[in-house]
Length: 401
Ligand SMILES: C[S@@+](CC[C@H](N)C(=O)[O-])C[C@H]1O[C@@H](n2cnc3c(N)ncnc32)[C@H](O)[C@@H]1O
Image (cartoon, rainbow, N blue to C red; front, side, top):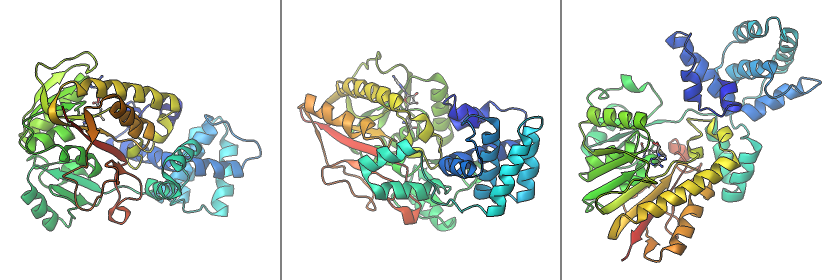
């Protein structure tokens, strides 16, 4: 899994999905170990390098096995005898003595807690430039923790009731935050009373005005925001290019007894038959804002990929803007901490389209404030004491004519 993520650029979900010869419990453990390694990779590598005379190549089996063993100790609290006993067979007939020696040295020295581990150097550099030291320090603290579980409810009264009954906190209407847990075992899942959605991911749909009748949800799957829009009473057209992701959207709507018109189409060639009162464009992006749940995004988001995304995002925004009625609202969002995919996409759009302006976001939960110029920019560190949020950029654009 580590190799598939680091060398082949896969998501951890996809890499884990390709491993089929393990029991459910072992599979869960394997994914957890890979995840813990990815949360702390630069620091684990520095430890390994401090105990070898010659630097082990990044993709060498010895380094991979050492990363996994150390990640178990630091991230999962696995007893030392257990991690040594499971690491060494992986290098039988290979660098077993080397791995045994390095592990022995590091365990004798004692491992640091690594509870605010370094992020990959290029990510730290980028985020420091864009957001400053505090955001990087907060991201370091957050990456070592499992984030809380946020639920969105179709009905606010049910959310408040659920929070009270299940020791959750509600930070916004329709929202409940619980300590992390297994989702399908939580009360009300089968009945479709709620869906899992980070509080930050619920913000874009909250900025769509109540009065908007026909709403286009562009890039909609798997549909967290579609469900919010449908639950709020809008008539929703949900477009996505991926058939398999739209199938998940369909399942989600069925489970929650909500309705939307689904369209499988590439938004770069599709054209709607009508104009909309509001449009939500939740554009595909590097997803670096989701690093708490998906630490591998920090390795997958190479500069080239970010630049390609930015181009696609600009084209999607240009197209979507043509389908909005005058006076309508277009909400642009990305779960990315890269300004290139956020502010730097919207600013040139506004410069080119004098009929659009950035409007103060109405409908934000009271625990969050927009920046003075109107952006909703969610950075690491925001609401940290309450469990933090995914990184996001959201802009509410209003068409004046
Ligand atoms: C950030 S995800 C959307 C998440 C979704 N809004 C939600 O809340 O569950 C981006 C989506 O854009 C879709 N997508 C990417 N390129 C597209 C295109 N050219 N046209 C339509 N959809 C596209 C992807 O399939 C993906 O489902």
